[in-house]
Length: 263
Image 1 (cartoon, helix red, strand yellow):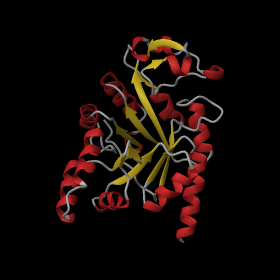
Image 2 (cartoon, helix red, strand yellow; image 1 turned 120 degrees about the vertical axis):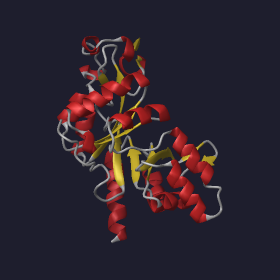
Image 3 (cartoon, rainbow, N blue to C red; image 1 turned 180 degrees about the vertical axis):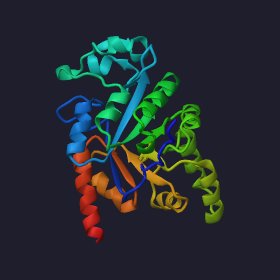
């Protein structure tokens, strides 16, 4: 077997814009059309999600069922790939498999959230068949799922699970910088990023100090889901390394403006 190429996911300058489920202004989310719109707007990164069919194929879908996107009260995991092929989203669009999405956009870097345990092996298979190990970031809110993926695809880019994020927030209370950074680095071993909301209820997750702490240990801060240009500017001023946005077009414009101001 040909060895996997070294990951390029984090190569190139930050801040990065991750097109959240593509750019779904006039087309359904998480479709090849939404990915194409994002790329046409200038996005180098696409964020997407995977579930698995009953016959073990990774399918691009955020939700576990089709009620929101297709008006059908049925789980993706209860359908075969052949049955998924018959599903029509708004305006007749189809749900792509992960392999199809990776093949369709060979220069694009994908951020893939593996939603459920049943999708682990299908996701690994799709990434390998597309020879995309070097340009995907694979993650999951579930630490067990994330570890299973990484065990099969060593060296692939990844971000922290919910466990890692909770650990980082808790460690922010450690007053001694050197100890705080050492503990953060241990909690985030192998992670290239944390991907978080700006706030979680009353708790401010993204702060200038936390962004700087993470940067000091070589970990990027990506914030989701940021669609308001005012919020984009505020976060970029804090030094975040990535904006996950439904409006990649607006986020790209804000990043360009911020970069120009810094020159």
